[in-house]
Amino acid sequence: MSVTLKLYNTLTREKAEFSPIDARNVRMYVCGPTVYDYAHIGNARPAIVFDVLFRLLRHVYGENHVTYARNITDVDDKINARALRDHPGLPLNEAIRAVTERTETQYHEDVAALGCLTPTMEPRATDNISQMIEIIEQLIARGHAYLAAGEVLFDTKSMRDYGQLSKRPLDEQQAGARVAVDAHKKNPGDFVLWKLSSHNEPGWESPWGRGRPGWHIECSAMSQRYLGEVFDIHGGGLDLIFPHHENEIAQSRCAHGTDVMANVWMHNGFVQVEGRKMSKSEGNFVTIYDLLHTDTFGGRQWPGDVLRLAMLMTHYREPIDFSVKRLEEAERLIAKWPAADPSDAAPADVVLEALADDLNTVAAVQALHGLAQDANADKSLLHVFAASAALLGVLPQKMEIDEAVAAEIDRRVKARLELLKAKNFAEADKIRDTLSAEGIQLKDGKDPATGERVTTWEVKR
Ligand SMILES: [Zn+2]
Image 1 (tube, rainbow, N blue to C red):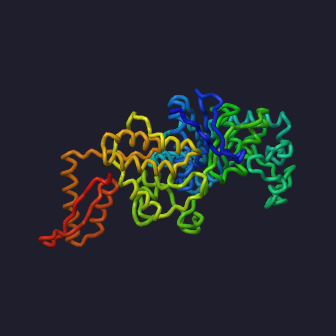
Image 2: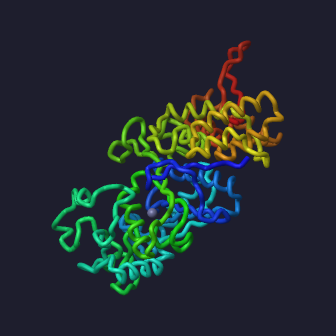
Image 3: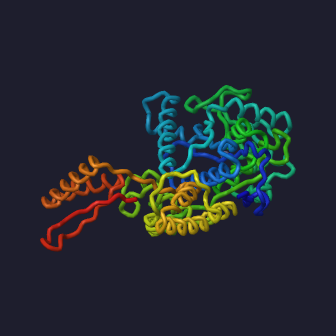
């Protein structure tokens, strides 16, 4: 089936048919993590949403005809602060590397557990400093940037149509600007392209002295290097529209003299936790790692595919209220789906059409559930379900348990029963949790004849 892909474009505030610049190389850029701390579920959402889009584009245009770039921001003042706090004894460069490498590795583990494919490329900001310097030089040469008080600043008034994405008038952007701090700026909305570094801040040599880039210039440089001056899709969370994406557009368009940076701008909605804005002070700050590996949310660990499905049960542009109830709902649903191996079969049209309609994952999940019921009743339909589930990245995998493994599980279940008899509940729970993490669910009951405690086990899915 040839499919018409429609996407909502923040730039035009309209849903329109997607037509790539080059169907042999569809190019998408998504703003990635700043690597200084564990990724929270607000970070999980764009990773999952744009992974579904990546899968869909690969299906429509062919696996080798889509380039997905997601950057790693590894230079940022929050990273410096974390490096100084965690590694006070190390030279700054080494301390920073320790923080960014550890966080980057953790991020990759987290999003892999959520079923996200690896993007085609994941450029690091620090590997692209010379490209940033080049763009800043172009902006100065074209009269869009100026030096003031040790900073290179973008002159927002120099761009005729600055503010198109967020549709904020320039005057509004002054709100909250502190006059004393910003006295060196020509306009309150002007933003930093380059700033000087002191000896205890990371820095690179530049025509304006040893310094470091502002955040926005990173994405302009990396998207140009890997995707070109104009590319197809730029994505990120709603909170990035202003100022980050607005300023990316200003930099790229003014440096290259183009009318657009990306043709389609896509933004996923906000994530709340149990009805409240997520924040460390509210005590409802939930990391992906915690959800997967600790009992801090709802008193238990959650499998990655349940987390992913819970996210996809809301349309990406709507806000999500992330809650235990929602996760339980996703888990009940996925428990009814058959385990299957990935299949080369074509996905069902009903799933494909739902996704092609601006990633309507809500309708796609509903359709997938119908296919799962069909496949449960008739095994010959399993491959269509598997191919459709793979398009959403929520394919329950078959877990093969051989005899030796089964005997080992029996042994551990028995050991747990002995511990329970001895009232050593802590150790008994440890065995249950370890098995649970391995995908084995225990069910406690009583033998109706003897009244003795018995435990059976099953593979979760
Ligand atoms: Zn960005």
